[in-house]
Structures are given as C-alpha cells and as structure tokens.
Length: 111
Length: 112
Image (cartoon, rainbow over all chains, first blue to last red; front, top):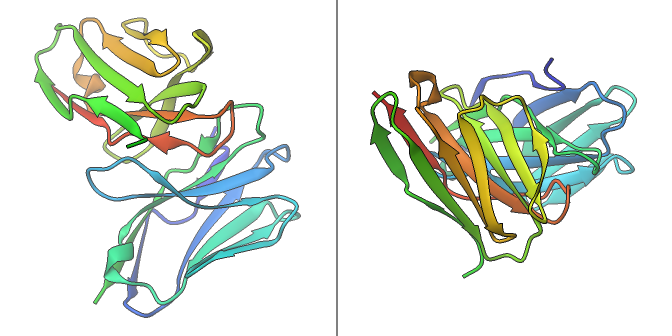
C-alpha cells in the first residue's frame, strides 16, 4: 500500500515557469515531510522540508505548501532552470520510523 | 570531507555469484540504511542499523544480509544473486530515525 503518493510521474515546464509537484499521504501520524532531489547517477539529496505545524516553508526558489486537513502538500519551484531537471521525491515520517518515500516525479525544464 | 561513501560504483556479475557492497559515513550519524532503487526509481528500504542492532527489515529475501563493524560502516552482502537483484543500491545515514537522510551515490548492480 502506497502511503505517500506523488500525482505525476513526470512534469515538463519551460525555463522561467513555476513547476508544481504534488504529493499526498494517508497516515495522519506523519508529521515531517522532506523533499529530496536526485540527479542521474547520484543519490537523493535533501532539498527542503516542512513540519506539520506549518503550512508553508520557503527556501530561495523552493516553497512547500502544506495542507494538513487534506493530507497533501506541494513543492513549488519558482523561475525553473534547466539545472533543476531531476527527480523529486516526497517523503513522510512520524519520527519514530523510517520515512516513506513517494514514487518520485521526474521534472524536465526546457530552455 | 564528511559524507556517505559507497564502493563500488558499478558491478556486473553473473547469476548465482556472491557480491558485497561497502558503505562508510563520516558524518557521525548513529543510524545507517540500505535502500534498493529499481529501474522506475522506486525507493524501497531494505535494512536499517542503529548501534549495531537491526531495527528494520522490510521482508527482503534471505540472500541479502547487512554487515556492520561499527556505527560508521554498513556493508551489504548478496549471496547467489538473481536477475531481479539488478538495481541501484543506496546507502544512507541519519541521526536516529530522523528523516534528514544523507545518501551515498549508489552502487549499480547488473546481474547477467
């Protein structure tokens, strides 16, 4: 059973647009939601994370919007660059167990 | 340099052989993990080790076994590999069960 779902396997945007990657979860006990970025040939790297007590977390061009009631969150990448092309994983944790990862969204940013 | 280091980067072997992958972290973390990433990029946790104790084993086949000498090292051994073992094996570490993982760059296994 997939506890963390990412709605799109792939997403293509043009350079300069805002990319929006969506994620939803089932377990109400999850309270920590990191996003990982993975480039080809590398391991995933922590990009940005949010706790369930917040509804927004911003770090430069990256923003997480979190809706606890709806059990979903989204990662917004403003002013997308070709260098942002990567696979993005949404994860969820209750801090007592290993996090559950979504299946990933492959983002392509076209110049 | 502080990071998670995996060797080898790439390994090709035949069905039935035994392989072993190494992982070392220099971050001072107390928990290490092995994940399998398949061709569709799905990440599946295989093992986690905390203070030399196995705390998660997500029903992996018995031919897989983790080996740890200390909290900075967690190796993965596969006895008698099978074609479906072809994947990328990612090692990671963290403080406790916190979700801020640091991953290694992975070992790509091809079983022919």
